Image (tube, rainbow, N blue to C red; front, side, top):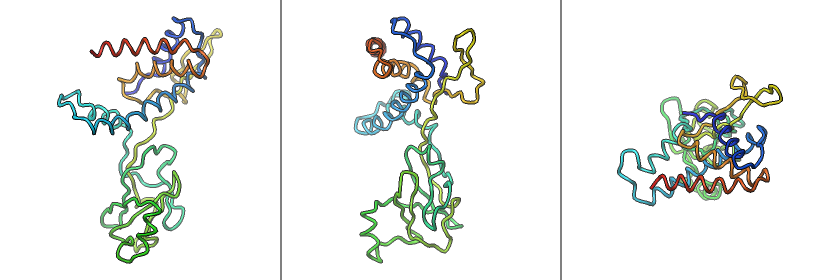
Length: 243
């Protein structure tokens, strides 16, 4: 369930105004909202790694690792075809601008899928020196040419690589939130029908965290330092309510 970008903006404005810290313009809000969403999204992966190191809660709704997986699940994409074939064995990731983390890569030889193993360039140099360890049709490998391009080996196969027979799993980046508006009587009013309008894509439980994060960023970037105090108080209340 998406979080209304208008709901968050109105809360940010209300809290900033309550503290008499000035007006945060739509342009400022959209800039800060995108960064806040990305910062929160990125923390999920660190928190999952930490959760694996600690003993999980056996409660049905309180296992931290499971909660984090639920938050990431809407961004998981499976068996997506590549964008294009650049060379006989170089392919561009699917809509590479939205690929946040690349997962498994698959090659289909016309009969079945084979997992293509990732090998970094240094290891591949050693692997390719020996006929016993060099990649084969039944054990292909790939390395990264760039953030958006991968190269598969063996370079040539009976069933050639194509943009459609090489697929991958990945975690997509959340779309940038955008509060769109129309000006009525010199006042900006939310316009949800604008084609560019975009709600936050994070889990509904993150609305309060988003609001506080945007206020925190506003205190740093928009030169309204007093807003940081608002954030600290809000976070203290949240922590107290958890007890």
